Length: 433
View (cartoon, rainbow, N blue to C red):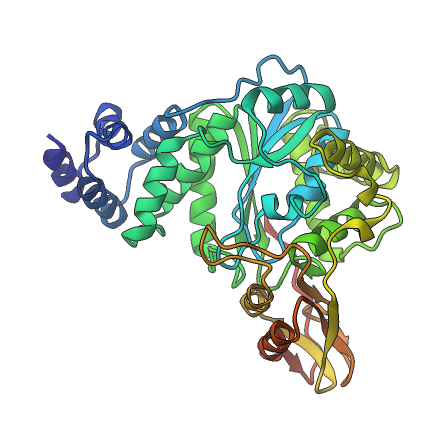
């Protein structure tokens, strides 16, 4: 029977929900071998999938394991997802901000792999912070304080985990329907009635072209709406690192500074936070439109309410709440050095993947799932596209464990910046939304 379904898809046919369930759940139960599923994945990659197939696949994967039931929570429930990028620490700021504004956010995040940093790794740089919560613990915490930031539950959408591993091994990862189904299966299993998506575009993201990013955003929205969830997507720029820092403890420190009413906030990062928060408040109906939502977000930052909620979140998950007042309690690297500009002009490019590579060389990321990471190390990005720069002025600040790692990272960062003699316009962070 399975070979007939593979042939049907190979020849451009549309599989029914029952046929998709036979393949996917048969694979999860061990009744369908991986070589047959690999052939089906390649057929999907080459022939595409209809909206009905994509939605059915998503719902099958979402139902393959545990699902959070948030129906007992009176506040509007929202889940936020970013497709990831270099220096993307958005959840660390946005989740407590939204909770302070009256939304309930049960956010499950992953670990970093390759050039993208993982929210879970960043959180684990906070002494004592516990990222592994059971579903009942997550639900109880959201009911109590309005939010949680935890790792992906092991029993959430197990079919997606198995299919993703096979996609990775069969060169079928880039299929937009398969990407969309993978992302949204976890969002549906997370139980929120509203879903906000931040689709990154550029050299520091998985979607390097706007065309592909828009196609993914539309596919995600169609799945969410088809599953009865209010869904909105924003396209944001990832042609350069997001914010001032790349590296786990460094990004937590920047998140705290961004939340602090008098802290140093990177203009592009703060603009993204306010925009996403405005969309979230409008999407959930607590504000009538984006303008009112933005004003609400601004007030929550200025009043210190969002920072207080972050401190409450840290304490609720076993972390040391003193890091909010004293970020020096976070891990710190013993060797700090600056990478200087060789010429005067204007910053034309800051290559995000070069910065990410430098962080990998320092030990801040992992290339295999089992690789250990150093929470203390990373890179401060001191200039953005459009900024004026003078010869001898620092472009980066490197936080290293060893001299050898520092030297290697410095050589990589020498290739990360392009300086133009002519003024360069700054790059906006919001592309569409």
